Image (cartoon, rainbow, N blue to C red; front, side, top):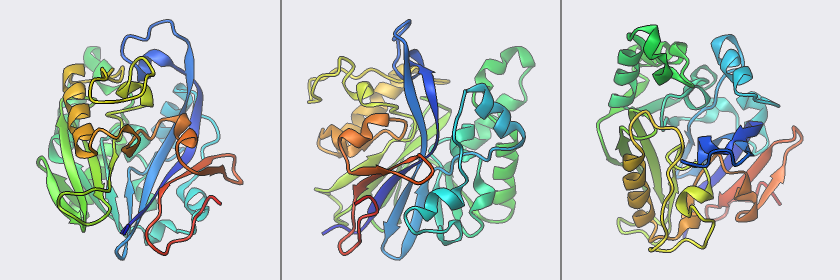
Length: 295
């Protein structure tokens, strides 16, 4: 039994991203393709998303150009490939507030947004600091935080303090404070609906960029594998390692169930196809009775 279908949808990509950005300590080891993606979770009468990407205008476009983003497409175009319209999305889980995750809230007019309270409040604090400390604002669009506050005013933002179970049936939120960002979080889908699930999926946000974060030497992941954290942390790499251990424990150390959305090699593990726009759709799992969107 599976309650939800899960897809990872690429909406643009950076063709050449420094490997040291995704793998701590990988200096002078070249470049990797870095897909920019969001996740759709569909089932139990809901259409939910994990992160919403960015809007290719104003300062969001400036950041996208700075990072070398190519082939950006809007949510209407991307979601249409799996037969969903942005207006159908009722819930958005924001893993953190970097521009490529929280910059497109206006395209989802009927959604309620969930974010860690520490994430949004600490970015307000960081925005107030002198410009000489602006390294902390790497990959941040202050306008996204302002739009987040607008959501709160409109009663469409839920600020979460730590873990929260069954936000939707079988879907839980887990906090990773002072790690990749001030208040990062991940989403766990217990796809059999059981409290002790045998069919869990972890949607890791940027707590894990690529498979190599779970197995730094590229080896098969098991309980004795050494984790290598991502390269960017406004908190600490130690907290990233602790979060990785908790995510892995939730899936019984079956690493394929921890989904890194910036991983181009998802296609080697899960069914996928290239859309008419030249972007990849990866199908993580299907709810009972749901039709494949990649075959």
